[in-house]
Length: 164
Length: 164
Image 1 (cartoon, rainbow over the protein chains, first blue to last red):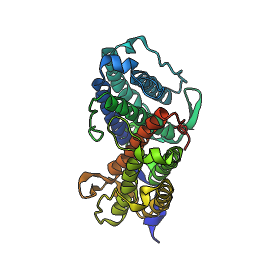
Image 2: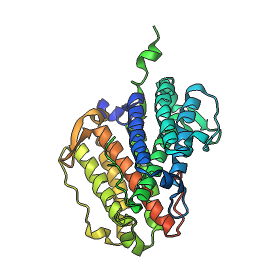
Image 3: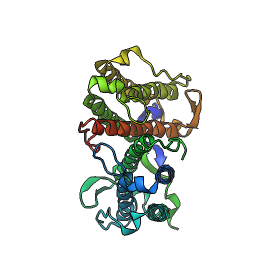
Image 4: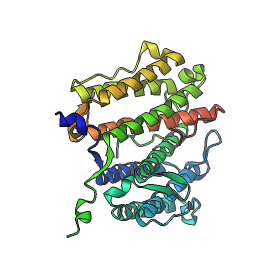
């Protein structure tokens, strides 16, 4: 009997530790994109009626730590996108760095088997813990790429996408 | 002894089958973004000196199937981004759908244990099979999000990001 075929698609391809490393790699790149924005444009510049990049970053901050804290602790959290400390570029970078450490802390409290459990993130988004975490990461890549277009149209070279 | 702590971060959080489903979900959304572009703008419209979205889609086509075929078969492939059949919107959508089926076919030939092996994708990008596949997916999310900004500035509502 060919056990290779039997187990295809069932074994580990990503561990929890690798998924966290992947996300933190993306978060490091997002930090460099924030840094690339002049302060004024971070909060005021936009295209096509979309939000300024600073607002998108506040969404990312509102999702990452509160989202993982809910997964780790089970308490439903609310989405708070308007933080007083995020109103300056230095403040938003400080919040970003604090979130990096917090994310590591709460991630370590999520047991592997929990990734297949169903949750209602922020009391409204249904999925497994895994699909929820992947969505958080994808959402960050998505909005950061919109920041890339903002930077390009401002004549600013964004950081290389492949550098993590 | 607490075996929960010992195994933390080591067990499966994503299987190969889930990763393929995740990617194909993204590919379905990218297809709807291609469809949302008027034919002329797909090939001619751009912002900030970037490529038109049609060129980005050709890059995605050049990466997905040839990339997974290399992983499945071991033969190094070259990046061919300029395909004659991709010069019309109907043609690019047909190539997209063919790639969807091919991707499923070659993915099924990649054994789970291969995801940790090191490869040189397209003869030039070093990493594990896993990091390479994640890069392919992230790169698609990144360029698609740039297509979202193009659509918004054209006054066209893009598909919802969360619909897969």
